[in-house]
Image 1: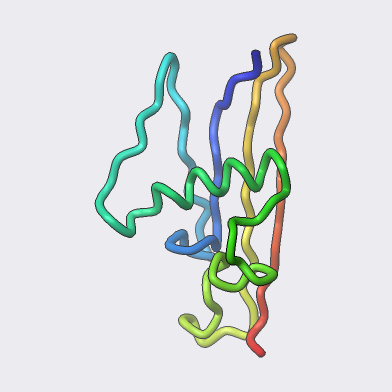
Image 2: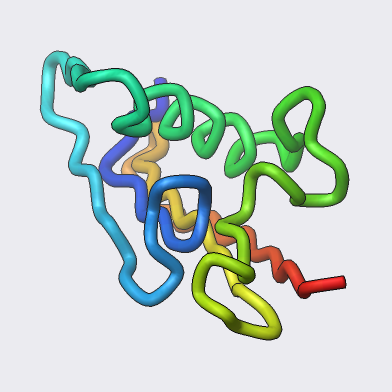
Length: 104
């Protein structure tokens, strides 16, 4: 079975667009806890996005999921999800998915 090593998130919801936050998955179990709005659901959605390419439900082409550029008074925000996986055969894979959101 493949195992998750770490997840990097940048520019998605509460994760700032100017810094890659890294979550390391420990063996045998990683528990994600936090107060409301801390980003627990966002972490799960990023795992799904990295593995399937699917955006969360009710997301219109990244709006409402990618960090809002208006909050930074920026023309655009670049978002990225990086997932490092170890395969059953011992290979290391890194999945990188990126999005960009511009003000309209």
